[in-house]
Length: 492
Image (cartoon, rainbow, N blue to C red; front, side, top):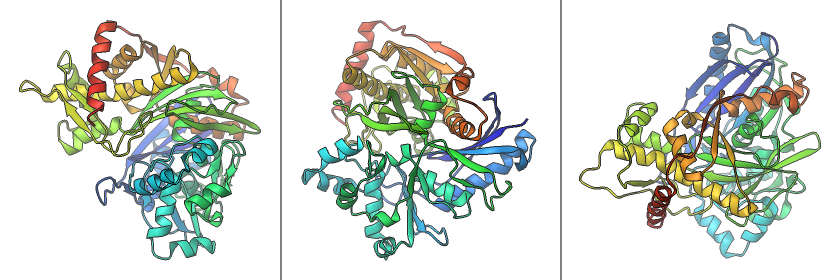
């Protein structure tokens, strides 16, 4: 079992450590959950030390599951929740505050200040992003302003900022590296899309000192080597990184311009490969870096849905409607329809293409006959409606058709969800045999750097289809669904 690649998929609710071989077969998978911290309504935090613990717990378990020791690992790839923002002491590695999670809305007032001052067009043009609390730059500003002594320490070079990729490389290398990868940097509101470098004017508007920022690197190269990691020998190259959604695009082998994937995780994220062109959206989508290898840059259009699988988690943990997330599908299947119930899962605002941080979740159409099964079905449909809004925005931006969408993520195992998605979109939905394409993408990027694979064409041969979903619903029924959805969203 030579040429094993260890992939760390650091997500919003847990960390998955997986091992892949040179045939792209997954030999082990261990997921470790960690705490979600909600200091106040609209605020979401993670403890960075707990995230690191989830990594170090998962690595030896994955090696044991595969029946190997750390010497069998050829390279390490990292993929991560992207905009989540941390700040730590360079020397000790100790975080000065909990990380502020991508879902957190605490910087909404500062985003509005920047908008009111007329700066949104500059940020849109330079970064491809909108001024929304989703992104890292305003979160970093909050930490600098609200943690005692943080700004002075940052300006003197004592502190290091990072998204989770940066944090993990720092810990894996024993504090030797302070780097980020370009697709993650493209989510910060601080990197210029053309130069792929930190932009001084943006930093000034955000109030971020350059001294705190990591070096921006490509998606497939050696960043550092392991040092002092439990279960692993020193000297293993850490040599592939990408933000989770870009990693999934790569893992789905969407290497050609126009190919589209949707990852159904905590949120849902639709990305389209736009090739070497940074296509700016007129429909509320984001322009982002897909990946960079050597001197080749691939860009993508993205629509971000903030709440997807998290809606099911809320039904499970907040309402105790189900005891485990997989129970949601049989419960939803026990009724023929939602009977007019619509669930808009705007639990942390609405993302693309509406970008309304003040929107809140709403359930409409409830009658005396409504049961938990109708609510379960409406929750799944609410995910599909949001994804449909994003794909329609892509169609308008490109003035063209999306014919096939590849899907992955935990909720992509849900046949009922994917069938309804195909009905709403009128397209073919292709589900691969490996749903862990986010972790796979990081392994592929690392393997390319380490010489396990020669090129992307060799990788493409390993992608295999599990199931296809095609539209079955009558167009009139689809329109009735959409009308109910639009009426409900207007009230959110």
